[in-house]
Length: 446
Image (cartoon, rainbow, N blue to C red; front, top):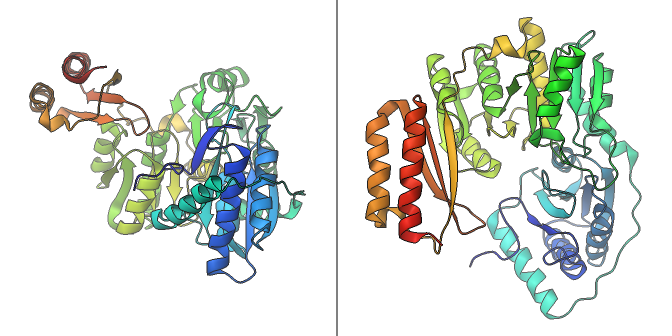
């Protein structure tokens, strides 16, 4: 049965509207409480949130639902998504709940759930919870709210963990950070100051509505200008819940998740911490990354888009490093989820030990030209069953051979076909993107 509420990253929508209306949010709390009681005696559940103005009422509504089933709620207040995952895994919690819509604008919000293992819930468990939520809505459950007080010690535990993962000091390092007015706005400055860095801070003044607003990991150009203007050695930007990080080199050049995977993979292999000499990335990672890794004897395994899929393959292969071009990087030696703050520490550790900047550490990463086109479609049919589309894809693949690749897929949430072409030759990128997109538009376009 197709899920109605849970996507690949929990439940997400406009705060106050279905599926994030008060009744559904309360029903979620009740259903999660029942799930926790089934597996734990006197269960405790952790709740954290980012800085959105809707976070407080959603958290208190979830808490009321949990309490109605006998679960004890502990509230971390504003904290990052990986912070919730870490505390859930290392503490006494049956589950952890993060109230966040990640990189989305403030009007949106979401509910992410972690099991005691620190992993997101398996599909079967999500299905049980979803069915109970829908049943409770049918019975017109009356939402309530519970009073919540943040426990200051919880985010301190997470901060101490982060500090334990780096073995070098950052004294004298000039570092510009952009916290996106999100969950890292207090943790990140304290973390880097305690390590001795000289900070330039932006995106550290949340007002409930400015999260991700022209700042953070999706809008790095402003940080790039700040790095150059302040002559900072490094820059790092986080998204709203700080599970991803994008970097800026001293030159102002933006350093994305692909570049981070390259420099960290090399360092981990040299240290003997890269089992199977394997890195897991998604279909969106640049061909240049795959070739650069191969030059160092490192295999890159691709997955569908989404850090959930990256983690699944990492676990199956026993890999310790994986991530996405968008800045989600997972270090399985330390964490069960992408963590922007942890990623920043790993990158800075590598740079300090090497005595190099990000420009030098990624100088040989050749980024192949890449183009993505979205085409609205009437229906989602198998491209292999549309002769003109499959013919254009095959023509592109045969022409480019090992010097390029084609990715044609559907959006997971919209009636859109996405065509991505990547090649050493820009003319191939432009020609084949246009021809494949036109064939899709002609055959099944809306």
